[in-house]
Image (cartoon, rainbow, N blue to C red; front, side, top):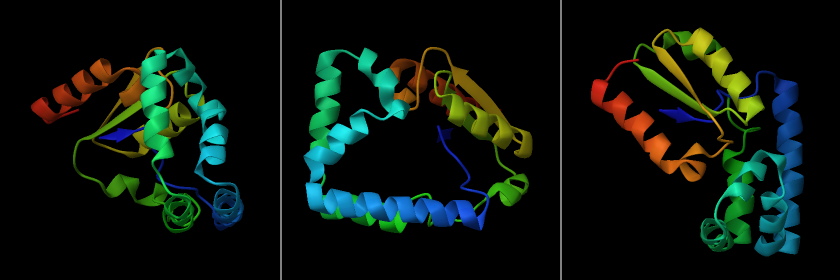
Length: 157
């Protein structure tokens, strides 16, 4: 089950540029702190759809984000950021198990990526959730749970 996912950046140049951007962000987090980073993160267009969530849900998400440490966030970017991950695009065809790809229709970038992955994954099912953005499990938890439960119960695409 892959939600708003990617098999990585395809070229060395893309990965190098991303590592440089992630390193700059990691240094900014270490210098300015978690609160400044969370303020920045919450304003990213990728998460703009979360503004429609109830205030209590947004507040809970913010509290969770503020529990992180600057060092932990910086290390996450350096060690697990998209720039350090390999590209798996050419290996997708090798997967021989059912794969569920879930994206939110308002997350155009990751819907395009999911559609490309779906073309390469022989045993995949693509579900685009209406009205949802990048974090379907947060924005529409009931819908997300139903989609995943049905996929896991049936065990097929």
